[in-house]
Image (cartoon, rainbow, N blue to C red; front, side):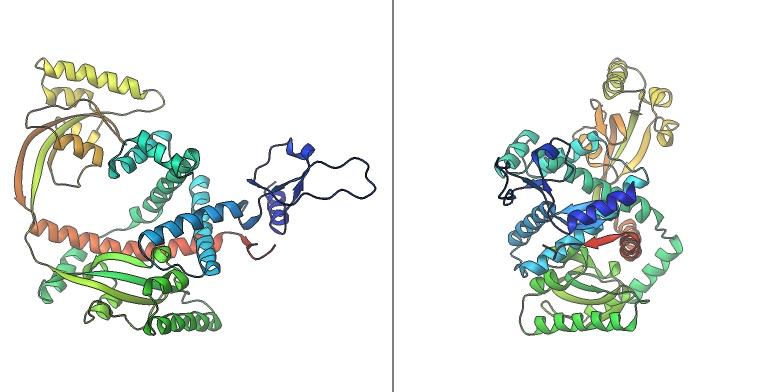
Length: 458
């Protein structure tokens, strides 16, 4: 069946397939566009009804098609993003191919998620949409109304959100969760930084990647090198770096003009950190070679980091009730409402946490979570905790882990400079390892996928 489907998709990709009204009665899996009707033979006495045409396939990834409509929608979204960031648009054919490659990579990853049983439920999607609305200072209803006014289909928007969550969880599971940073690595990292004077710097960077593996044939390496040289030549003649990145780069950030944002030198590969160390804002590196390909970096700005870090910590405890196939959302919430009623009438929080909480890590400690710094908890938990005065108990709060009752015990200001140094070192080492591991993983997944192109076929 998969082989048959693949050949069917290839047939569709080679040209538009005309569907008569009788055939239209059957379910059609592709979006539909309008084209010129097929003219009936001259000898036919009765005029044939207008024909409908299935949307053209522009690529096949394993057993799934990417349609012209999907590509056009993605190009529209990328164009809006580039215009909002004042990034010059590359030529249409270049942008089209860049966006198609992104769709192919995303489709291969989504298929990997599906094949390995990674699913995102409706609750996670709703929570994500709520956060999107909250970041825009509007309600969910207002967000949906705004999308309708912009001509965005709500169901398609929800599916896009689901796909983004799926891709993030897939990367977390298959890449980030496998990254290990040892205490010895952190100690060595900090020693190196102290040897440099301990003055960590941040750089606002943009990046171009011309991808080619170390195992590629010499002619492919030479072709990639030529592309990199062409890109840097355009930059040196005054072409906007963002336009060159959007036109040449194979990195995921290409359609954002190659923007990497602010990065500490600690978070960069040694080769990158050394290449930009003496550069001023506006300067561009020479072509750099790594196992992933050829790189060009631009320094947009730079700044130092020397201030001590004082943060407010919260000592809190909680009772967690999880939801599953047996315990519904309403049942979990009602159970916590009953527990809260007992707490409001003098019951001991720690005893109830030991008996009722389903957080194995904290239940034996009476629900005690210890001292928590900003960012230690998920946003919903942290927001509810921040609104409580010491001694107060929250109403039931929903997070991705289940339903919680939260009690704040006390707060304090803490000097986190040393802890933050170790945390930054750990994050920097993780970022170095994760970026490289993700690029390799993504590239391998893309190479394993069966891909056929029909973009240039009419």
